[in-house]
Length: 106
Image 1: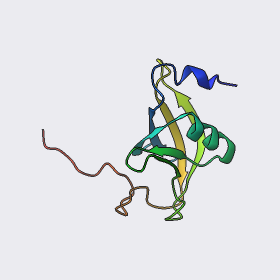
Image 2: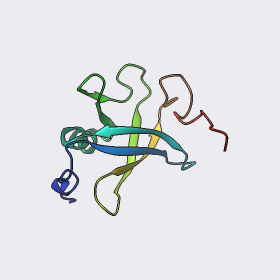
Image 3: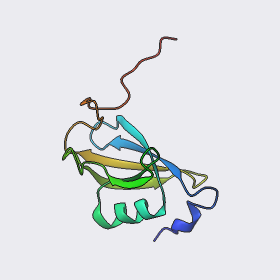
Image 4: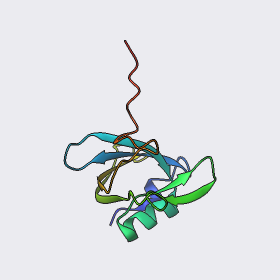
């Protein structure tokens, strides 16, 4: 079992990237704390820490569009996470499949 203490040595809040299992598309970026990671491991659905509400939230608890976590990875520095997920529906609160749809011209 992975030692969760390693993830939170630098900060109580770390980023987590959500990637779709089938397409490997990046769906969203959220933030998580130790309790949210523990709940994710327990329920196999993605939990986050809402910085605006200052509360835990299970993605999909309101919309029904849960993110079913199939794989979890820590980065090389062990200060961010990647969840490979199967979404029940659109991931973005706008109804878009991914939160990353605002292209910036180069």
